Image (cartoon, rainbow, N blue to C red; front, top):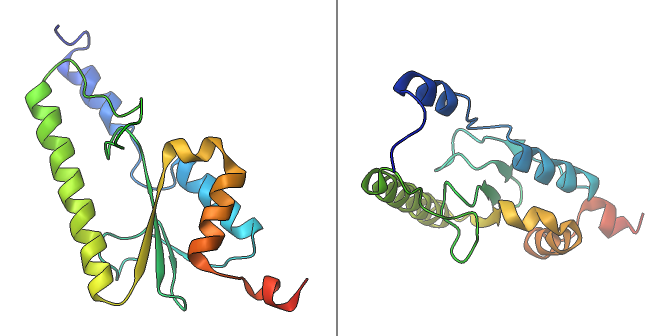
Length: 144
């Protein structure tokens, strides 16, 4: 199967894909803020530049797109039918980079959590998972 777009059209389409402030990231940040957590975004000094970093707690949250990071078992994680070799290598590089970032964070004494894009469909479950990972907020400790 050949690509239905010209090289220029494909390039323009790919250039529109955001690397930060994506809808899934914004959704997770709104959820964290509503739960009472305060955080830094795109923490430059940390390996992998976590999407959300809670510096005092030494916790990092990465929000991964199921397609780009190839979430195992997810319907969105399919390899395109064109240029299979390119995409297979691209996804392998992404996964290696993700693993290296998690390992480097752990070596610095940080804990990291990966939130997958498909998990956003169940915000209540995601909120519980985030609270379990991050611990109580200052609001939660005061009881208000």
